[in-house]
Image 1 (cartoon, helix red, strand yellow):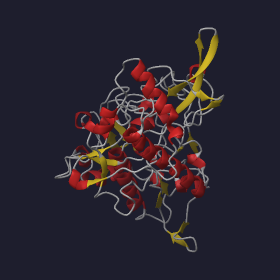
Image 2 (cartoon, helix red, strand yellow; image 1 turned 30 degrees about the vertical axis):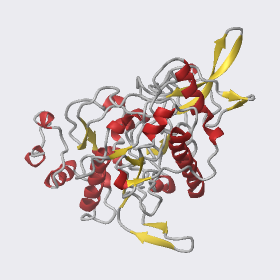
Image 3 (tube, rainbow, N blue to C red; image 1 turned 180 degrees about the vertical axis):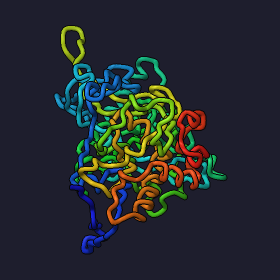
Length: 421
């Protein structure tokens, strides 16, 4: 017995709910809204390393943005803001958990005075909320270390390919132990209600905007660095109806589909996949998963210090083209036959780090739409699972998409129409 979705309710406003009927649906949300609502199998958090025999699965020993100096995690016996209560990751290596990759707001920054909107503090800004960042700065200065940049890759300008936008920068990531990635604030988001998600998003905005303001104004930051940061502002021509701040929370990871098969770290390899519909080309790029307090021996007593866990390099596991099979966008056939899920595919947490980048998700979205269009030409509720893969591949190639990496094509022994990719 196969199940299918016949109609979906969408809330247009607080007073209006609209029902949409269709033969096929595509859940292209970052959160997997239809996946969760339809009752099909999904997961969130991290699988253990044992579950899929993944060497990088589960909790990791440390982080690529670990605190370079010991920073006390408590004040008056309580954890500082932005440090969560949790188990010591060093004792949990390889185990599963419910943590999510850090979310953020990818603000647009500029030094172009003609397009600069001044950075302002978030509503109800409290400098004591950023005591962790302050302690890190002071500890690095005492150790004569260069201060860690909270948004390191301003050298990466995501806007550079747009004509005349050379002075616009995508503020992302950074290798500071207290950077623009809001470690731990996404806890609960994957299964939260809409109102709870709005609260979580607001907490992220406060953190990101507050950290920007902290580096501009806090006395703990050397004046020379504050002057340099003051040259930046928000991009006046972006998000003009939202104070030039991004409307959308950067949800790196929420729930993930569990289909009949799950694409894992071990499936990400070079070579042809006969059922491929997309080509990825990124490392196992996972961001910070948690920030907790861990004990260290300090002379005769134990001190709790801040500790990050989860961030890898973007090139973890190597960067090379790898092919992604059609089945990653499909639920279990016994659970749902007319739903495709490109943004929350059936992949492990580790593998998702290499697939979650938008250029790859666009390809899976194109494959989802193509499959739905082809299936709609068949009998009513023809299972997406039963489509001939060469029909999907041929259509994708005609649309200009690649379904195989060129050097792998000859080993695929596939049809001429697919070889043209």
